[in-house]
Length: 369
Image (cartoon, rainbow, N blue to C red; front, side):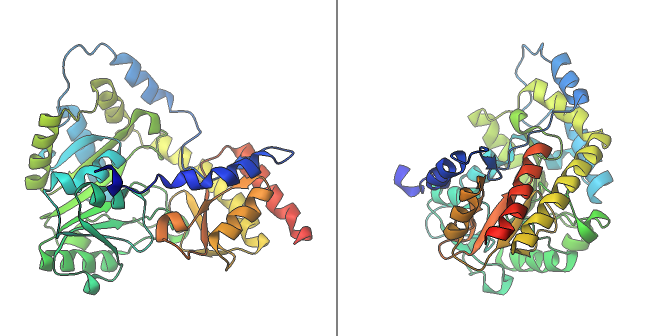
């Protein structure tokens, strides 16, 4: 079992982290996408008020939480749901990593992920001993595909699928009889045209034709509400799938704690703190994007989310080393698209001070290139 899983990729970044830390002014860590801003007080207060929780919480979510998820999808994603179509999870990575097992997949089954993909999808396939392929073109998905992962907005590339592209994926998944799981946790963080237009969900009627059969949407409050430490996420979609998965979770004790359920309920009902956090990230993005482009990077996609997907046209590890010598730590694209990648990922999840410092180092290095 253990040899099915690759080494956790961040171990390969340790030598470059050491180089960055040796910089006279210290490290500017733009590698890990972990929020640094305060959890909004309204959410902290909700958690505090719910700490007297002697009984077991509901695996499928409290009635209030499920209604809050349904209301949020209608208000923010243009999706009509019922409460039997939603349930909370202990962060989104937990559910992503175990979904193939929960669906009963195994040897001979294929899991499809994007060509540039978040690292948890391959872990889920490995745990179930499935084959995983990286392919964006629905017409190239094999006949024995059982699970398809879509990530829009994408991590690390910030790519957004429009409704037409999304619908083509749904159509092909249904022809194959596969479950299509859509990882959408950056949907409130669109830039450029997507700051004005609604980023589509797989459950949007424009995408799915009004039917949620064999579709699941995954969402997390880690970024938009600074709740990574709460492990606050949820899933919505086909009621047959949600019911079956909740049953499995009941058997295995995978339950979001009751105080966190209350905090998530309050977070989903308050759009103002999300608007404020989005503005904070917009300012950080503007500063870092200008410096990264001035240094000579080409930016690909990066239409939404909290990362810049950038290249100097060279092997990603050479770029990681160049940045480390400036005291700036970035992630090699190899982690997301395999060997030979020429991209690196810059994260916006650093303080204003660190973002400005990183941008300054890139700008000041221009005369030394």
